[in-house]
Image (cartoon, rainbow, N blue to C red):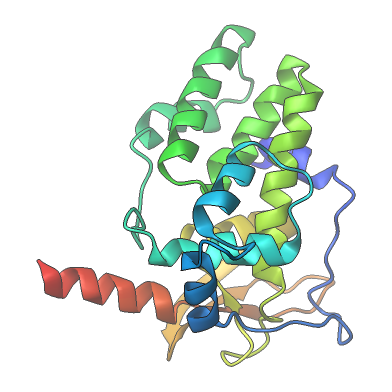
Length: 228
């Protein structure tokens, strides 16, 4: 997957997770829930989702927070969702070089996966990369803007230094997208209270690990389990 990271690493959006000055705020789930259900609100979910699907470049980080964290209140939300196209796509992930003849098939599969889960960041990253290889920089930019809008929303919820200030995620897979984005090498993973804690290999950044808040994810999973 390292080669696939070229597109997201070439963008002009950068984050410093060690910064003491970067402001953040945990999502107010109750407020988000009310706003996305209010048809008179600018955050009414169907309207926001239509803008996301249309690659609306005017979506703000607040819009993305309502989209991303509001998704847990949608019937389609599955805490441990896995792409139905994962097995078909995995051979392409592992390829040293992707053949030009496979571009359209990969676009079809990755797009289908994103239609199933609009915040499938792994496939979003891959899709942007394929459009880049294909020479369609316009679509590559649209995909990358959507990727970074979602990623920025996650980053705005914490600093990852403690469980209390952990980054809020609605999918465990997003933790690994985070690791790939910042090129961290994980050494261990542990559930600590409401958080996943991922430890890293020591490097020049001297960051030992990062906390991800998964409370809502686990609560929804428990709720689904009890309803069976």
